[in-house]
Picture 1 (cartoon, rainbow, N blue to C red):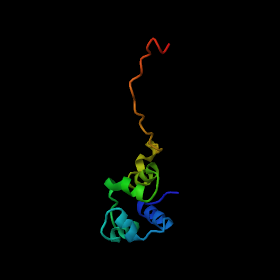
Picture 2: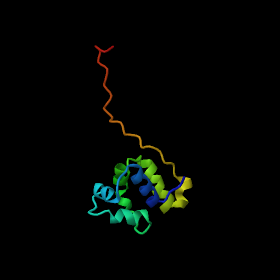
Picture 3: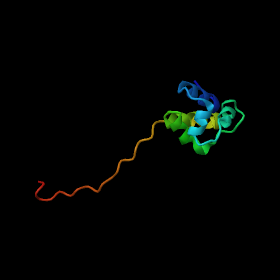
Length: 102
């Protein structure tokens, strides 16, 4: 099911039993008014804070990013594949085998 960013925020906030004020404060806003404006489509979603929203809403980042792209850039959806990010593995230099290891 496709959601607007605002509708998704409202749905998740309600599932988490948070008020607009609680969500707003968790995201660093002084008041919950901005959350209400987002939910009602009267404010533009601050894309630069997408990771914070995903974290506070307890939503996988790739899923939240997909919702943003569906709303903001629908023509790109056929070209994008949203999946969980793979953690980069720390690469250590290969150990050389000494004669005692053989």
